[in-house]
Length: 314
Image (cartoon, rainbow, N blue to C red):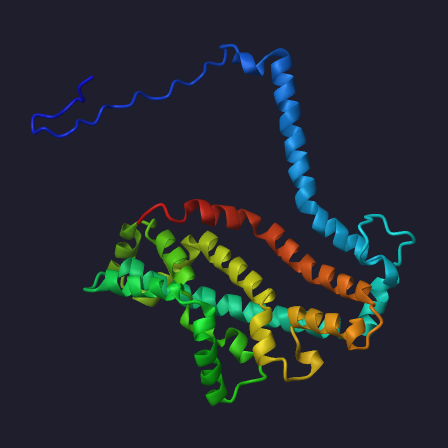
């Protein structure tokens, strides 16, 4: 069959008929009726429950391990016998867990807020201003994501060494003042979807660029802003490498939660002179996991909205 062409010899675009919608009074397909429909629903629910159990098993194992005794931590039983509820009390005396959690929360909040604000400012500039070389400059920003962290680790360490800030919190969040390429891209794609007429009207009324950013762009980009906050909070909360580099020489009370858990694993290891009390490490690991679960539950709506609406314009 010959292809349809235009008078200029180019392939013609054949219109695709719209998909027919099933009427309310139309009967269900055969595979949805009777025994076929019941069997399909049962298989679907079995698959969903199976995947749910698969993903929840590590969390259930961690909860069970936190309630076990010293010699039962690493068995596969999900029902501790007997349950050692005193582990949740003793861990606060065994480890400076409160200091670790406080340090992690403070550093994560500083890192998330600074990178969200700075990346939003840069993204607003790329989305609003028209200037020669904008595409090339934005491509260079995106190209910085191609550099592995191992390449920049030593130069960044030398920079912080020259500033005399080693052993402090600043290296764990200070670089976020200059934005992040991924978050700049994320925010720019969202801001491109906002109507320019709103900013033009504000400019006619005398609003400057910073006023337009704070009064218009920021309120309208709350979903993507919250997504950046969640992403960076999680990244900073779980960041063991930076804490190991910049805080490992300080006191134990200055550790973050991931670094503290690594310290506890070494402390209780029998090869390092410990007694194998890993049940306290399991309690600490569970307590470190709970804030992230609560944070995601609170910001889930913004998380879904931000991902769904980002990237709709190029």
